[in-house]
Length: 633
Ligand code: WT7
Image 1 (cartoon, rainbow, N blue to C red):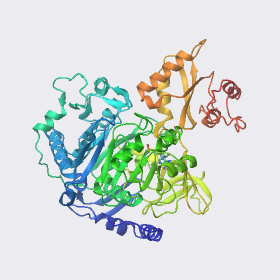
Image 2 (image 1 turned 90 degrees about the horizontal axis):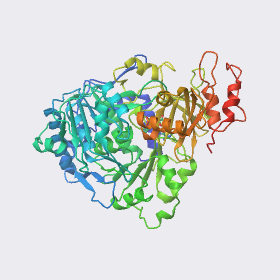
Image 3 (image 1 turned 30 degrees about the vertical axis):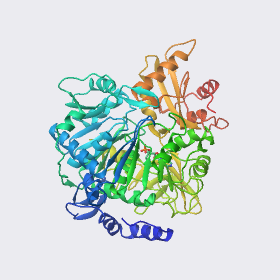
Image 4 (image 1 turned 60 degrees about the vertical axis):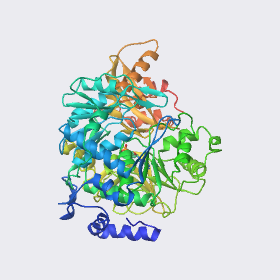
């Protein structure tokens, strides 16, 4: 794949992608292997919404990730697996070995009765089997739904039921730093609340004693040993579903964002090559979990599409110490490193002495993803990790966008700290004002929308297309609304300012305040709650809950503890509220709506001017809440 090498080339490519989008993407698509070429490049309307890319084509993502490279890269390492404990040996899979494993596992799936279109739930630690399973699903046209192994039994069963998965893939345990979490136990609990799972395939990762249910649970290694390693890549229709990935929004339960095959493949392959300026032979390391879209797109699929060597890291940045990332880069001679601002800030807080004896000279490009990166963290990353020699690409995108939409192009775009900078080719942005009009010119701020389809965009919410429309295409007619606020500065650079809806981003985890409120309200003493985010030095945002309790308690400590633990159990440990304030009432308008603007200001300690409170039923509530405010700075 040829890539953009100068800023002039970027501008030319961008212009072409606007003037002749179909020609532009058809040309990019030529770099992939098609079992059958397309009839149409693009058909779309944002009203349906109905979008199809490369309609009529047949293509197999797993073939493009693996088989296509076997002639030239059979013995090149495709994936390096770095274990949680650095003293244990790392593992590698060459492209030939990956091919063998993926074909075998695809046959395991088929032998268990999994057919094209069936949903397979993947609930695994960061081990090679996760990538193998995803690629095996793609190979036979099964739809994977990866659930992050930090989610609770409740979250897992909700996701399994929503997608009606028939097969679940899991392991005995998952590590969180030096702690072992009994993953199979969580699975057993989740499966009490599901009826669609026929089998559970269990990978024996650490030989931890687990319960195997006869007839339902099967050992991974046994099935693999019995399976053939011959499995031709099945022709998949361009718009056949590839995966479902759950993500939170303003309202309701998490949505199963649905991605399809051909457009997604073309888009992530292209953006990986360009954003990171990937050069043949380089080692790429993305620290995201495969349970998030970053892990799907830029840890597994896009690097393999480009014939890269990609790293899968099982551990966390702080175990056994806060030098772990830098040891990993040194050990595997990483050239491109892609991580999240929250990780950068947490390591920054621990100081820079740790860099003394680490050799980071292999690094060429650094990436940031998941939340706005503040200037201080940007400079720390640039100086201490990149030694001022590496471009930083601040990549803005979402689960729904499939791939990166706004980002500098490494070694091409002049950098501006904390700016995601410019839209990539094919990406047509619009900033909207409160009246629903597009804001023209520079030095402006508005709500970020897209006014034209790009190949990697989600096609639907699984099982609920109307919800896809109301969530993304109804706020501004004819536009996809991202939920983010954004500035365009006097030079035309874009800077994401954060969510403008009721979604909070805690350490890169996207959580709907409604989900948290539902969990809190389940406590027997709780009448009602309202949750908002507030700025947090390390996590980006912290969680502040205002809770009305149905009785007088001399001390709130026990209740706060129970609420925290309940949220951890229902949603996941990362969703534990940081602050829980017991309040006598919530600020409500006459129509019964909670005025979150006020709560946000209180949580942020921005209380000098709370704005107009006259529309509240009882404005005195605000003073009562202020009196019990918890410190957040
Ligand atoms: C939300 C999407 C993209 C994969 C990981 C998160 C925020 C993401 C950036 C960035 C500022 C960012 C946005 C977005 N976000 N990247 N570079 N700068 N904000 O995917 O869980 O779907 O979350 O993350 O608010 O809407 P996600």
